[in-house]
Length: 363
Image 1 (cartoon, rainbow, N blue to C red):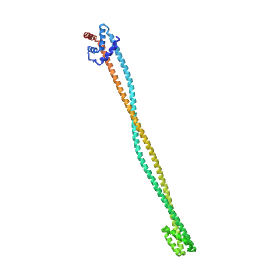
Image 2: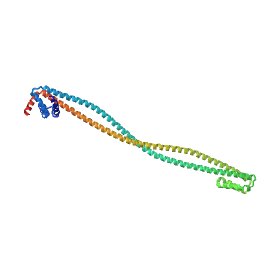
Image 3: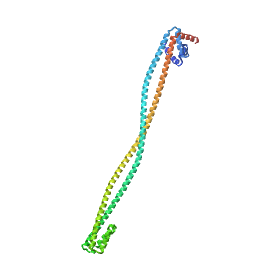
Image 4: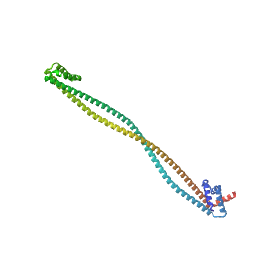
């Protein structure tokens, strides 16, 4: 009798795919009888009936099979539930990882794009600042040359004024000597030098004086001397005023240049510092872009790996689910067959006996 359990189990697996509820007990038994294992089981049943053995023993065997099937299903349900929880955890972790990589890709893409834009702006500004530095240096050189020319002009004119004032002072001394009664012949050499010096200046201011001195050389009289002394005093006063004016202009131009040069130097310093900052920023931008591109490639690979893992897990879960459903369905079918065999053996024994009698005649 112990052999009946595994034989019936195998027969149930075969019968699961073949038996329909609408078939009669004879048809059910006929279906089982077509299989060699089923034929063996029915042979045992036939022998059991022929010897008068109780049908209850067969029922016990069928009950044991049903209990085993129900136990297997409970175990399968427990494993399925555990696998489902584990799978959902894996899926959640993978989806979180995918979301993280996607966020990183967006952030790195934005960083790459914004830094590339900033790099372009910095490079454009460097070109402008470089041009501004060149213009600043040119302006400084031009203004410095202008200021030097102004100073040189002042030095030259101031020296001319000093020479002219010296000539005026020398002429005043000569005229005063003449007024004091010194003979012209004694002063002639000095007189001619002064006269020549005044004539070299070609200054309109000295023209009346030169004419008066020329007349004095031909005729010395007190009236002419007084007139010449007055003229010399006037001319010297004008020279002093002119020299003072030139000095004031020189000082004003020097002060203006000091302010202007200070502004130009400050602007030059600012531009040079700005250029250095931009050039350093450009280097940093390029490093950032390179790192962003490399990190973007890594994150893309990580994302692809995570998506592949998710797809594998989902396929595995689908296969496990399909296998679980198939095994569950198989067990349900087996339980249905067991129930139908039990029905045949308990409620329709006469039909089973009739089938077995017919089977004996056929076989």
